[in-house]
Image 1 (cartoon, rainbow, N blue to C red):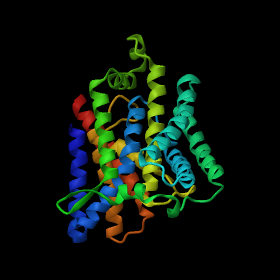
Image 2 (image 1 turned 60 degrees about the vertical axis):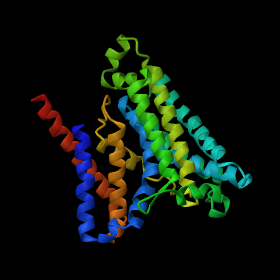
Image 3 (image 1 turned 30 degrees about the horizontal axis):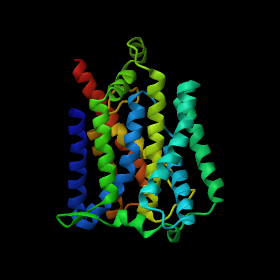
Image 4 (image 1 turned 90 degrees about the vertical axis):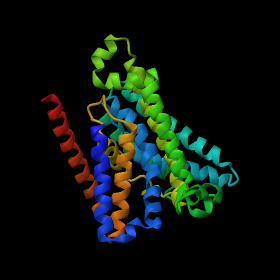
Length: 316
């Protein structure tokens, strides 16, 4: 709870500082921009939360998102009238297939998650180039029924909450319920806290590890379809590039330790909101976008330092 308060404090301080410098930050257009950045980060971060809670890490999610976005774009190109629900199903399906590769190598072959996902980070990006032949999915290939999910939604106080955001919040709610009320969710935290003790208690560590990487792949694949809806195009080089760093930052800010056993959906949502605010704030203030990754890195370091201080105070 204390970590969530710190994350909320970061958001409030940042918004007030930027708003005082540039009042446009509080206008509906800027708020909508923040809320449009959140869905992609949030959906992938939910999968990353499960992985990190077990003590693992998935560096491949950015490339996986890019490949699934390309794959769904090619499916839509061949069948422009494909229902939106099938487009999302295809994205999740491709994500499951690629996530299965990570899961098998990590859970069954017992290769380090860092080594595996660094390798698949490059492999999935190369696969995206092979499938697309280096060509991007243009806006003419993405039907209006899909892009309308980013442009339409629920109006509250003059601010449009896109359907993409609604989808992301539903996925977050489901993740929270799974972690809190199911045996699988409890086993994820137990295995991440102490793998040896978890095995002695009969918790199937291999199965837990396998499924969190499959779920992470499925959600990244789902985000690939959302990427096409959000931007209206998918480039095999830029789609999802460095996205893994953004997602890991959101999860770290949310209080999840990279050693496993901790992390909450609410904290991750606040981390996603903070990073989205930073992204839009840089634009509103006219700061070069190249500073974005530096800002993310600083936020991660600050979050880790604060978490360390909290842990020492609790121990004392």
